[in-house]
Length: 185
View 1: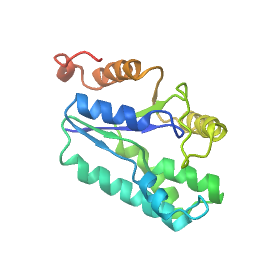
View 2: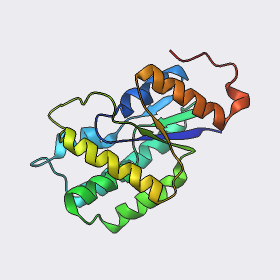
View 3: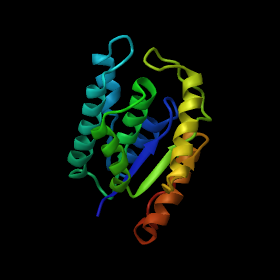
View 4: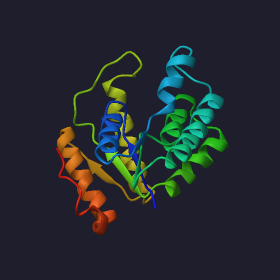
């Protein structure tokens, strides 16, 4: 049975890097963030419509479902519908009801929710909204998880440290299967 792990965190918190590194380490699959490429191609004045945000969440779920077929033991998901819902709240105040439903239902899709800490340097690329937004988004995500009793772990530090923290968390999910895996970098 495939265990699905989702990585959350504000922009530039290392979600993609960690997801890809773990997929490589475990010879499995990392589901990239559909919304990033979609935003780059379709944004107008750095914004997407509520309908476009709903589309992103729907396609992200489809990508996860399709990737599950090729996953081995773990499926590492770079984001989820909650992240898209959060962007919709930030930019439009009130997300579409269907997006809200996808965000609420998203927690049932994962065996482990991982919050990537914002303790790494901010990568200030043109498509990101700034380090101040990163701090605000990070605080919102963590408060939401706590307020809604969503179990999660928080990983921090260097990539090697985060991999070691993930190794411990994955061992806790399936200790019998993981005893023979190589140690982290």
